[in-house]
Length: 445
Image: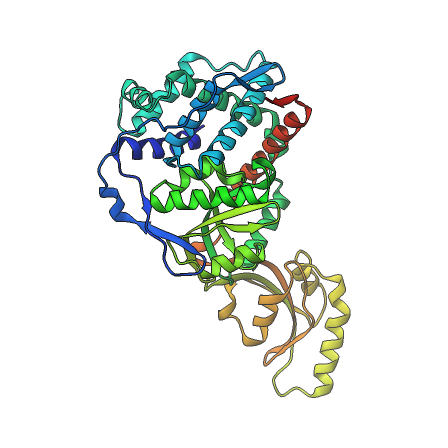
């Protein structure tokens, strides 16, 4: 719940103080729609105003045995506008209305599911505590916070019920799927190896918003909605708050924070945009299969300069002046031995046979290794044993027993595990919602 509170607090703080970080007018880079404008922090406060859109107060939809009225939808739209600072225009009202209706349907399904768990009840006191924390984060008293919303036509009960459902759903998903979302050691090791192998490539720290076509009425509707959101963010709506409310990506709960992505790991259309965007720039809508992306380039960096490897070796000493026949004999002996060796057995085998020497070279920067070792250290699969390598000291078999990025950019196992856990939990929660929607009787009037 803390992440949701933070993102809501960011948007509300900007409204209360009139100091949202905004994006400037479009720039000329082909992929860019705008850049961050720190000077926007000095913008004068802007009081909220109830947007001029009207709708019937009758029943608009039913979700199983729960109804959604025009009043419910209007309240949800007002709250969506307040949280994101997306200003309603004739062009974007349909997208705001559709997103608000989608969120209402999901919240109705979540609330209905929560009633099945009698021991999972979010009390008024817990909601009050959450509201107080949100108000504190923006430097306001709870009463002032709610009064500000009321000035924009939002009833306090609207926010309270949204928070109650969000808090309950978060606890339900966390409790139900915690064991399934746990990350195995092998998965962490695989992610660390992948990160280390990608350490030499360019990397991009991005924010993402994904508009899913099936949720908004088709690909063209997704493109139109994304275009309107880009325009609003260029004019000042905070990216993180917009992502939290509109994005269908798992990163939405983190304000669209997709973390560091590696060159070549994304779809071609997205990769092209990443190459063109400068730090601080916001992309134009990027159509992909199934929807539309908006990307915000937070930072970028070249590959890590240090690549660290753990190497063990078995060798036969031969001087540089050794005959070709001696070198061939040593090479043949090691080649015959190689299939029997692993990183775990190399040193023991070397000490048990006459004429072999074994040593653990420890962890070293690839650039600091002997030139003959560097190619093996860079390209060999972790856990493998190389073919014989000739150096002035002899003939060697090299076991590449570990590899990781060096320096401050090296991935941390605990951080990787936590990230994978969050991804797993978000995916399981999304599937849970998909199953609820498929089993529900949802009728639009």
